[in-house]
Length: 76
Length: 327
Image (tube, rainbow over all chains, first blue to last red; front, side, top):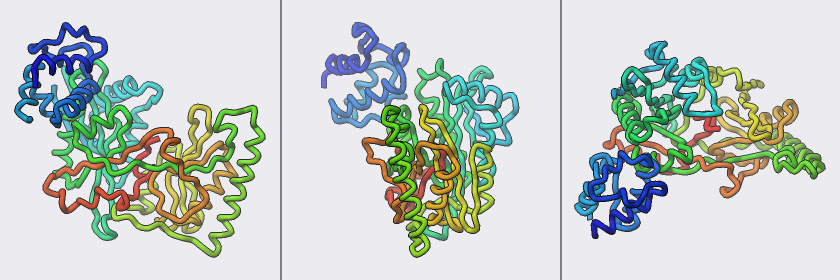
Protein backbone atom coordinates (compact mmCIF):
# COMPACT_ATOMS: atom_id res chain seq x y z
CA UNK A 1 0.00 0.00 0.00
CA UNK A 2 1.63 3.19 -1.24
CA UNK A 3 0.91 6.66 0.12
CA UNK A 4 0.91 8.31 -3.30
CA UNK A 5 -1.49 5.75 -4.70
CA UNK A 6 -3.78 6.30 -1.69
CA UNK A 7 -3.72 10.07 -2.20
CA UNK A 8 -4.69 9.58 -5.86
CA UNK A 9 -7.53 7.26 -4.91
CA UNK A 10 -8.66 9.70 -2.22
CA UNK A 11 -8.61 12.61 -4.66
CA UNK A 12 -10.63 10.65 -7.23
CA UNK A 13 -13.61 10.68 -4.84
CA UNK A 14 -13.86 14.46 -5.23
CA UNK A 15 -15.35 15.84 -8.42
CA UNK A 16 -14.91 19.58 -7.99
CA UNK A 17 -11.63 19.88 -6.08
CA UNK A 18 -8.40 20.31 -8.03
CA UNK A 19 -6.31 17.10 -7.64
CA UNK A 20 -3.22 19.20 -6.92
CA UNK A 21 -4.80 20.22 -3.60
CA UNK A 22 -4.44 16.69 -2.24
CA UNK A 23 -1.21 15.95 -0.36
CA UNK A 24 -0.26 13.94 2.69
CA UNK A 25 -0.85 17.02 4.86
CA UNK A 26 -4.19 18.13 3.41
CA UNK A 27 -6.78 18.62 6.15
CA UNK A 28 -9.59 16.99 4.18
CA UNK A 29 -12.37 18.14 6.54
CA UNK A 30 -11.61 21.73 5.53
CA UNK A 31 -12.19 21.09 1.83
CA UNK A 32 -15.20 22.90 0.38
CA UNK A 33 -16.49 19.68 -1.13
CA UNK A 34 -16.24 17.69 2.13
CA UNK A 35 -19.60 16.25 3.27
CA UNK A 36 -21.02 13.07 4.73
CA UNK A 37 -21.48 11.76 1.19
CA UNK A 38 -17.75 12.24 0.52
CA UNK A 39 -16.97 10.46 3.77
CA UNK A 40 -19.15 7.55 2.72
CA UNK A 41 -17.53 7.32 -0.68
CA UNK A 42 -14.07 7.30 0.98
CA UNK A 43 -15.22 4.44 3.22
CA UNK A 44 -16.48 2.54 0.17
CA UNK A 45 -13.25 3.21 -1.76
CA UNK A 46 -11.05 2.01 1.14
CA UNK A 47 -13.17 -1.12 1.48
CA UNK A 48 -12.96 -1.87 -2.24
CA UNK A 49 -9.31 -0.96 -2.88
CA UNK A 50 -7.68 -2.03 0.39
CA UNK A 51 -10.14 -4.46 1.96
CA UNK A 52 -10.31 -2.38 5.14
CA UNK A 53 -13.60 -1.48 6.83
CA UNK A 54 -13.27 2.10 8.02
CA UNK A 55 -15.62 3.31 10.74
CA UNK A 56 -17.03 6.75 11.41
CA UNK A 57 -14.66 7.03 14.38
CA UNK A 58 -11.65 6.45 12.09
CA UNK A 59 -12.70 9.38 9.92
CA UNK A 60 -13.26 11.47 13.02
CA UNK A 61 -9.85 10.80 14.50
CA UNK A 62 -8.00 11.59 11.28
CA UNK A 63 -7.24 15.19 10.36
CA UNK A 64 -5.04 14.80 7.33
CA UNK A 65 -4.96 12.36 4.44
CA UNK A 66 -1.71 11.06 5.93
CA UNK A 67 -3.48 10.32 9.25
CA UNK A 68 -6.11 8.32 7.41
CA UNK A 69 -3.44 6.45 5.47
CA UNK A 70 -1.78 5.44 8.77
CA UNK A 71 -5.10 4.23 10.21
CA UNK A 72 -5.74 2.05 7.18
CA UNK A 73 -2.18 0.72 7.21
CA UNK A 74 -2.54 -0.28 10.86
CA UNK A 75 -5.83 -2.03 10.15
CA UNK A 76 -4.46 -4.10 7.28
CA UNK B 1 -21.20 23.39 20.44
CA UNK B 2 -23.40 21.58 22.94
CA UNK B 3 -26.13 18.96 22.68
CA UNK B 4 -29.06 19.08 25.10
CA UNK B 5 -31.69 16.36 25.41
CA UNK B 6 -35.26 17.43 26.12
CA UNK B 7 -38.60 15.71 26.47
CA UNK B 8 -41.20 17.46 24.29
CA UNK B 9 -42.85 19.40 27.12
CA UNK B 10 -39.47 20.61 28.39
CA UNK B 11 -38.48 22.49 25.23
CA UNK B 12 -38.62 26.25 25.90
CA UNK B 13 -40.82 28.29 23.52
CA UNK B 14 -37.85 30.29 22.21
CA UNK B 15 -36.08 27.08 21.24
CA UNK B 16 -39.22 25.80 19.48
CA UNK B 17 -39.17 28.88 17.24
CA UNK B 18 -35.61 28.13 16.18
CA UNK B 19 -36.37 24.44 15.68
CA UNK B 20 -39.31 25.26 13.40
CA UNK B 21 -37.16 27.72 11.43
CA UNK B 22 -34.37 25.16 11.04
CA UNK B 23 -36.81 22.40 10.09
CA UNK B 24 -38.47 24.49 7.39
CA UNK B 25 -35.14 25.69 6.03
CA UNK B 26 -33.93 22.09 5.76
CA UNK B 27 -37.07 20.50 4.32
CA UNK B 28 -38.08 22.68 1.40
CA UNK B 29 -41.62 21.87 0.32
CA UNK B 30 -42.48 20.30 3.70
CA UNK B 31 -43.50 23.39 5.63
CA UNK B 32 -44.36 22.61 9.26
CA UNK B 33 -45.71 24.77 12.08
CA UNK B 34 -44.71 24.54 15.72
CA UNK B 35 -48.09 22.97 16.45
CA UNK B 36 -47.59 20.30 13.76
CA UNK B 37 -44.15 19.39 15.10
CA UNK B 38 -45.55 19.25 18.62
CA UNK B 39 -48.46 17.02 17.53
CA UNK B 40 -46.00 14.74 15.74
CA UNK B 41 -43.95 14.44 18.91
CA UNK B 42 -46.85 13.81 21.29
CA UNK B 43 -49.01 11.44 19.18
CA UNK B 44 -47.57 8.28 20.72
CA UNK B 45 -48.00 5.85 23.61
CA UNK B 46 -46.09 8.01 26.10
CA UNK B 47 -47.48 11.39 25.01
CA UNK B 48 -44.01 12.88 24.49
CA UNK B 49 -40.82 12.33 22.54
CA UNK B 50 -37.11 12.79 23.17
CA UNK B 51 -35.28 15.54 21.32
CA UNK B 52 -31.58 16.20 20.85
CA UNK B 53 -30.95 19.87 20.17
CA UNK B 54 -27.50 20.92 19.00
CA UNK B 55 -26.71 24.53 19.86
CA UNK B 56 -23.83 26.77 18.87
CA UNK B 57 -23.64 30.40 19.99
CA UNK B 58 -27.32 30.31 21.06
CA UNK B 59 -28.33 29.08 17.61
CA UNK B 60 -30.04 25.72 17.03
CA UNK B 61 -27.94 24.10 14.32
CA UNK B 62 -29.19 20.51 14.60
CA UNK B 63 -32.18 18.56 15.81
CA UNK B 64 -33.16 14.90 16.06
CA UNK B 65 -36.26 13.32 17.57
CA UNK B 66 -36.96 9.88 18.98
CA UNK B 67 -40.66 8.99 19.19
CA UNK B 68 -41.21 6.25 21.78
CA UNK B 69 -43.99 3.67 21.59
CA UNK B 70 -44.95 0.57 23.53
CA UNK B 71 -44.43 -2.65 21.61
CA UNK B 72 -45.58 -6.15 22.49
CA UNK B 73 -42.81 -8.74 22.23
CA UNK B 74 -43.70 -12.42 21.80
CA UNK B 75 -47.30 -11.67 22.73
CA UNK B 76 -46.61 -10.86 26.37
CA UNK B 77 -43.57 -8.70 27.10
CA UNK B 78 -44.14 -4.93 26.93
CA UNK B 79 -41.13 -2.96 25.76
CA UNK B 80 -40.46 0.58 24.51
CA UNK B 81 -38.92 1.16 21.10
CA UNK B 82 -38.13 4.62 19.72
CA UNK B 83 -38.43 5.86 16.16
CA UNK B 84 -35.87 8.28 14.84
CA UNK B 85 -37.15 11.16 12.73
CA UNK B 86 -37.53 14.91 12.07
CA UNK B 87 -33.77 15.29 11.80
CA UNK B 88 -32.01 18.33 10.44
CA UNK B 89 -28.59 19.96 10.48
CA UNK B 90 -28.46 23.51 9.12
CA UNK B 91 -26.86 23.57 5.67
CA UNK B 92 -23.96 25.78 6.71
CA UNK B 93 -22.97 23.29 9.44
CA UNK B 94 -23.17 20.07 7.40
CA UNK B 95 -19.42 20.05 6.83
CA UNK B 96 -19.20 18.68 10.36
CA UNK B 97 -20.54 15.28 9.41
CA UNK B 98 -20.69 14.12 13.01
CA UNK B 99 -23.37 16.51 14.31
CA UNK B 100 -26.19 14.05 13.51
CA UNK B 101 -24.05 11.16 14.83
CA UNK B 102 -23.40 12.97 18.12
CA UNK B 103 -27.07 13.90 18.62
CA UNK B 104 -28.09 10.30 17.93
CA UNK B 105 -25.50 8.93 20.37
CA UNK B 106 -26.57 11.38 23.10
CA UNK B 107 -30.15 10.25 22.57
CA UNK B 108 -29.02 6.62 22.81
CA UNK B 109 -27.36 7.29 26.18
CA UNK B 110 -30.35 9.22 27.53
CA UNK B 111 -33.02 6.83 26.26
CA UNK B 112 -31.17 3.76 27.55
CA UNK B 113 -31.71 5.20 31.04
CA UNK B 114 -35.41 5.60 30.18
CA UNK B 115 -35.60 1.84 29.50
CA UNK B 116 -35.92 2.14 25.75
CA UNK B 117 -34.56 -1.03 24.15
CA UNK B 118 -33.81 0.05 20.58
CA UNK B 119 -34.20 2.81 18.04
CA UNK B 120 -36.03 1.97 14.84
CA UNK B 121 -35.75 3.92 11.62
CA UNK B 122 -36.77 4.15 7.99
CA UNK B 123 -33.95 6.30 6.59
CA UNK B 124 -34.42 8.03 3.27
CA UNK B 125 -32.06 7.71 0.33
CA UNK B 126 -29.81 10.51 1.62
CA UNK B 127 -29.35 9.16 5.12
CA UNK B 128 -29.45 5.40 4.47
CA UNK B 129 -25.68 4.86 4.06
CA UNK B 130 -24.99 7.25 6.93
CA UNK B 131 -27.34 5.25 9.18
CA UNK B 132 -25.58 2.01 8.34
CA UNK B 133 -21.94 3.16 8.30
CA UNK B 134 -21.90 5.87 10.95
CA UNK B 135 -24.80 5.09 13.29
CA UNK B 136 -24.38 1.31 12.91
CA UNK B 137 -28.08 0.73 12.31
CA UNK B 138 -28.95 -2.76 11.09
CA UNK B 139 -31.19 -3.12 8.06
CA UNK B 140 -33.76 -5.88 8.43
CA UNK B 141 -35.98 -5.54 5.36
CA UNK B 142 -37.66 -3.03 3.09
CA UNK B 143 -41.27 -2.03 3.60
CA UNK B 144 -43.60 -3.24 0.87
CA UNK B 145 -46.17 -1.29 -1.09
CA UNK B 146 -49.67 -2.67 -1.71
CA UNK B 147 -52.03 -0.85 -4.05
CA UNK B 148 -55.45 -0.83 -5.64
CA UNK B 149 -55.14 1.21 -8.86
CA UNK B 150 -58.60 2.77 -9.11
CA UNK B 151 -57.98 5.13 -12.03
CA UNK B 152 -55.10 3.70 -13.95
CA UNK B 153 -55.03 6.34 -16.68
CA UNK B 154 -54.63 9.08 -14.05
CA UNK B 155 -51.88 7.11 -12.32
CA UNK B 156 -49.97 6.62 -15.58
CA UNK B 157 -50.76 10.22 -16.53
CA UNK B 158 -52.05 8.94 -19.87
CA UNK B 159 -55.09 11.19 -20.29
CA UNK B 160 -55.51 10.02 -23.91
CA UNK B 161 -56.43 6.59 -22.60
CA UNK B 162 -59.05 7.77 -20.09
CA UNK B 163 -61.21 4.78 -21.04
CA UNK B 164 -58.73 2.74 -18.97
CA UNK B 165 -60.12 4.49 -15.89
CA UNK B 166 -63.50 2.89 -16.49
CA UNK B 167 -61.92 -0.54 -16.83
CA UNK B 168 -59.79 -0.18 -13.70
CA UNK B 169 -62.72 1.20 -11.69
CA UNK B 170 -64.81 -1.80 -12.78
CA UNK B 171 -61.94 -4.10 -11.84
CA UNK B 172 -61.69 -2.42 -8.40
CA UNK B 173 -65.43 -2.69 -7.91
CA UNK B 174 -65.29 -6.38 -8.82
CA UNK B 175 -62.46 -6.99 -6.31
CA UNK B 176 -64.21 -5.11 -3.53
CA UNK B 177 -67.57 -6.78 -4.10
CA UNK B 178 -65.94 -10.21 -4.34
CA UNK B 179 -63.99 -9.71 -1.13
CA UNK B 180 -67.01 -8.35 0.72
CA UNK B 181 -68.94 -11.49 -0.21
CA UNK B 182 -65.97 -13.67 0.69
CA UNK B 183 -65.57 -12.16 4.17
CA UNK B 184 -69.04 -13.44 5.11
CA UNK B 185 -67.64 -16.95 5.08
CA UNK B 186 -63.86 -16.41 5.31
CA UNK B 187 -62.21 -13.77 7.46
CA UNK B 188 -58.51 -14.57 7.88
CA UNK B 189 -56.52 -12.69 10.52
CA UNK B 190 -52.90 -11.60 10.36
CA UNK B 191 -50.12 -13.84 11.59
CA UNK B 192 -49.07 -12.09 14.77
CA UNK B 193 -45.50 -10.86 14.62
CA UNK B 194 -43.07 -11.08 17.56
CA UNK B 195 -42.73 -7.30 17.56
CA UNK B 196 -45.85 -5.22 17.10
CA UNK B 197 -46.93 -1.85 18.36
CA UNK B 198 -49.37 -2.00 21.28
CA UNK B 199 -52.76 -1.01 19.91
CA UNK B 200 -55.67 0.16 22.00
CA UNK B 201 -58.27 2.92 21.64
CA UNK B 202 -56.23 5.45 23.63
CA UNK B 203 -53.18 4.86 21.46
CA UNK B 204 -55.17 5.15 18.22
CA UNK B 205 -56.78 8.39 19.42
CA UNK B 206 -53.39 9.89 20.26
CA UNK B 207 -51.72 8.57 17.12
CA UNK B 208 -54.32 9.97 14.75
CA UNK B 209 -55.27 13.20 16.51
CA UNK B 210 -53.93 15.24 13.61
CA UNK B 211 -56.94 16.50 11.63
CA UNK B 212 -55.60 15.27 8.28
CA UNK B 213 -56.28 11.66 9.33
CA UNK B 214 -59.77 10.25 8.79
CA UNK B 215 -60.65 7.61 11.36
CA UNK B 216 -63.75 5.45 10.88
CA UNK B 217 -65.28 3.08 13.40
CA UNK B 218 -67.87 0.45 12.46
CA UNK B 219 -68.61 -1.93 15.33
CA UNK B 220 -65.41 -3.78 16.19
CA UNK B 221 -63.75 -2.57 13.00
CA UNK B 222 -61.62 0.57 12.92
CA UNK B 223 -59.62 2.04 10.11
CA UNK B 224 -57.77 5.27 9.43
CA UNK B 225 -56.63 6.77 6.17
CA UNK B 226 -55.21 9.98 4.81
CA UNK B 227 -55.66 11.56 1.39
CA UNK B 228 -52.60 12.95 -0.25
CA UNK B 229 -51.74 14.45 -3.61
CA UNK B 230 -48.58 12.79 -4.93
CA UNK B 231 -47.39 14.65 -8.04
CA UNK B 232 -50.93 15.09 -9.28
CA UNK B 233 -52.09 11.58 -8.29
CA UNK B 234 -54.81 11.50 -5.64
CA UNK B 235 -53.69 8.83 -3.23
CA UNK B 236 -55.45 7.35 -0.21
CA UNK B 237 -53.00 5.82 2.25
CA UNK B 238 -54.47 3.28 4.66
CA UNK B 239 -52.72 4.09 7.92
CA UNK B 240 -54.41 1.45 10.04
CA UNK B 241 -57.12 -1.19 9.80
CA UNK B 242 -58.16 -3.80 12.31
CA UNK B 243 -60.87 -5.71 14.06
CA UNK B 244 -60.41 -5.53 17.84
CA UNK B 245 -56.84 -4.41 17.18
CA UNK B 246 -56.02 -7.29 14.81
CA UNK B 247 -55.68 -6.97 11.04
CA UNK B 248 -58.39 -8.98 9.28
CA UNK B 249 -59.52 -9.33 5.69
CA UNK B 250 -62.92 -7.96 6.68
CA UNK B 251 -61.48 -4.75 8.16
CA UNK B 252 -59.19 -4.27 5.15
CA UNK B 253 -62.06 -4.82 2.72
CA UNK B 254 -64.27 -2.40 4.63
CA UNK B 255 -61.53 0.25 4.61
CA UNK B 256 -60.93 -0.13 0.85
CA UNK B 257 -64.67 -0.17 0.12
CA UNK B 258 -65.27 2.96 2.21
CA UNK B 259 -62.47 4.89 0.52
CA UNK B 260 -63.56 3.72 -2.95
CA UNK B 261 -67.16 4.82 -2.40
CA UNK B 262 -66.61 8.13 -0.63
CA UNK B 263 -63.32 9.57 -1.84
CA UNK B 264 -62.45 10.68 -5.34
CA UNK B 265 -59.05 9.03 -5.52
CA UNK B 266 -56.81 7.51 -8.16
CA UNK B 267 -55.09 4.90 -6.03
CA UNK B 268 -55.44 3.23 -2.62
CA UNK B 269 -52.18 2.29 -0.93
CA UNK B 270 -50.93 0.42 2.11
CA UNK B 271 -47.24 0.57 3.05
CA UNK B 272 -45.67 -1.93 5.43
CA UNK B 273 -45.90 -5.56 6.45
CA UNK B 274 -49.16 -7.28 5.49
CA UNK B 275 -49.22 -10.91 6.62
CA UNK B 276 -52.78 -11.75 5.82
CA UNK B 277 -54.36 -13.83 3.08
CA UNK B 278 -55.90 -11.13 0.95
CA UNK B 279 -56.60 -10.47 -2.70
CA UNK B 280 -57.88 -6.90 -2.63
CA UNK B 281 -54.54 -5.06 -2.76
CA UNK B 282 -51.76 -5.85 -5.21
CA UNK B 283 -48.16 -6.09 -3.98
CA UNK B 284 -45.92 -3.72 -5.97
CA UNK B 285 -42.78 -5.42 -7.34
CA UNK B 286 -39.57 -3.90 -5.92
CA UNK B 287 -38.48 -2.34 -9.22
CA UNK B 288 -41.75 -0.40 -9.50
CA UNK B 289 -41.77 0.93 -5.93
CA UNK B 290 -41.65 4.74 -5.81
CA UNK B 291 -38.82 4.70 -3.26
CA UNK B 292 -36.90 2.21 -1.17
CA UNK B 293 -38.06 2.19 2.47
CA UNK B 294 -35.43 0.26 4.46
CA UNK B 295 -36.42 -0.67 8.00
CA UNK B 296 -33.54 -0.55 10.50
CA UNK B 297 -32.99 -1.08 14.20
CA UNK B 298 -30.26 -0.08 16.60
CA UNK B 299 -30.01 -1.60 20.09
CA UNK B 300 -29.19 0.89 22.84
CA UNK B 301 -27.31 -1.66 24.92
CA UNK B 302 -24.87 -3.85 22.99
CA UNK B 303 -25.16 -6.49 25.74
CA UNK B 304 -28.75 -7.07 24.64
CA UNK B 305 -27.65 -8.34 21.20
CA UNK B 306 -28.28 -11.99 21.94
CA UNK B 307 -31.56 -11.48 23.76
CA UNK B 308 -32.98 -9.41 20.92
CA UNK B 309 -31.35 -11.26 18.03
CA UNK B 310 -34.86 -12.07 16.80
CA UNK B 311 -35.06 -8.44 15.65
CA UNK B 312 -32.94 -9.48 12.67
CA UNK B 313 -35.76 -11.55 11.23
CA UNK B 314 -38.14 -9.73 8.91
CA UNK B 315 -40.96 -12.11 9.78
CA UNK B 316 -40.84 -11.00 13.41
CA UNK B 317 -41.94 -7.47 12.63
CA UNK B 318 -45.28 -5.83 12.14
CA UNK B 319 -44.49 -2.36 10.87
CA UNK B 320 -46.49 0.04 8.74
CA UNK B 321 -47.55 3.68 8.45
CA UNK B 322 -49.24 3.21 11.82
CA UNK B 323 -45.78 3.05 13.37
CA UNK B 324 -44.21 5.81 11.34
CA UNK B 325 -45.67 8.04 8.68
CA UNK B 326 -42.89 7.75 6.13
CA UNK B 327 -44.90 9.09 3.21
